Image (tube, rainbow, N blue to C red):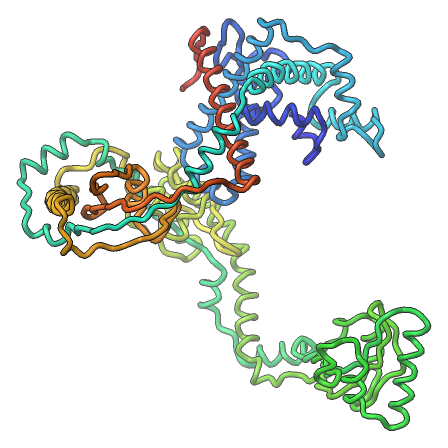
Amino acid sequence: MLDKIRDGAQSAIAKIILVLVILSFAFAGVSSYLGRSSQSAAATVNGEDISQAELEKAYQNEKNRLQQQLGDMFDALSGNDAYLANVKQGVLQRLIAQRLLDQAAKDLGLRVSDEQIKESIRNEPAFQVEGQFNNDRYLALLQQLGFTPSSFRETMRADMSRSQLINALIGSEFVLKGEASQLAKLQAQTRDIRLLKVNSEPFLGDVKVTDDELKQFYDANPDQFQRPEMVSLEYVELSAKALADKINVSDADAQAYYDEHKAEYKTVEKRLAAHILITGDDAAAKAKAEAIHKQLQDGADFAALAKQDSKDTLSAEKGGELGWFEPGVMDPEFDKALFALKKGEYSDVVQTSYGFHIIKVLDIQPSVIAAFADVKDKILDKLKMDKAVNQFYGLQQKLSDTSYEVPDTLAEAAKAVEATVKSTELFSRDSAPAPFNEPAILKAAFSSDVLSGMNSNMLEVGSNDVMVIRLKKHQPAGLMGFDEVKADIEKRLKQQKANELAKTKADELKGKLQQGASDLALESHSAVTRTARDIDPAVVSKAFEMAKKADALSVDTIALAKGYAVVVLDQIHNVDSVPADQLTTVQQRLSSQYSEADYRALVELLKAKADISYHTAN
């Protein structure tokens, strides 16, 4: 709850509440503590209501959290009403778990005194200024979050009471050092294996599938042949770019614009600079720089002195050369001196934040105005786009107004903006083509308004690019016809039968190896780890399931995506010890897993004993 007030605070109360957030998913918000709403309940837990207002507040908080975590991906997901319904149901379940924990804490007599709450508030960094509790800051933050002091104290009381129960639960869990050590050693174990793959592809030509088998598979697996909801759309798109393609601008107009805006086509003067740098800001550094300057006045070579004395080692290797610079790029004092010199001149000693410089201009690229012929095409494009944007702003209002006033067709809207009505093929939420895969457009395409036959609102495609869409064809989600999926089923069943033949072959090879056959070419892999990436994961998993036999060959088979593999376990390499930091990591992970399992078990126990009624869709 206090995470809403400040980020990153590490106070004791923040840590308590962080545990609560992690273990009880109490991100759902604080509105559940703010009293009963007059609205109907979303659920009732042992006679206590969870109001619709509480649920909605918690749901909005969760959507905000997902938006921050997933970014643009959430925008796409949120276009799916089923996804949002699942999110909302998850939030309700967490609110129920939270309420059950509150009730359990109360039944156990867990209490938090007023003084404990006051002390926690006084010690909370979010309410402090220069390390001291500040009442004005405290009240301002509460007002910002919609709390009164009394409602905030009750929120704190509930959070801290619940945390007593959670901390007591997870505090009783522990991980033995030997237990963690054993697991860490198992994870570090490596194995030497050999394998022989039996590809199923050669067997595909030997298998047949009957129509009866295809139909039986289809009838037995309807869940595998569900078609997603699909739409095809009609749309009218209006873009400044398309308008610009139809606009003509004369060369005379371009010439006139060029004559009036020559400054826009003037290149910036550039200078090739070199310097000798003496670092430091004391009198000694300045004296050294002035001595070098005196040598230059006496005829010494600038490049030679730069190589010898400059502390800027990179430029010193090139005789002090720094590169080309435009005005305003370098330190102001350096820049001022550089652009006050003529070609070949060097400056007096100049001080900057880097030290003392002697600056030389090696070359100058003067500012020039680009010839009209060189910029003519750019000017023509600009003038066309400027006119197109002006047209666009007027036409987009016509598009919006007409599509709204005549909501059952796009023909009138297209006519109003001199565009054409285009259409798409059928697509689902997961297969939408650009630009219909943009979250806002995708959401509109599957919205109730569009599905009911209405024109959409005007939708933004990009900069100066909008469209209005309407439904052309709607294909509800449902079971695909047998004829639609027959070819896929046939391919799948053939692969299954080919895999069965590959398994028979693999079992045959396994038997030969067990009988001592030595004429089979097996791949050898040494010191294979559990996370090996150069071997099929199914093979790695099988290798670490197998036991090393003392009196016989350890060999087994495992199914692959297209075939089978015969796996021989030759050697197991154990480790005697693991690094201390790795052991600590394993202990922490086990402790976290055990604590989470304990928490979930407690919630399930409380749910099993509770009287829970749902008054909203679940």
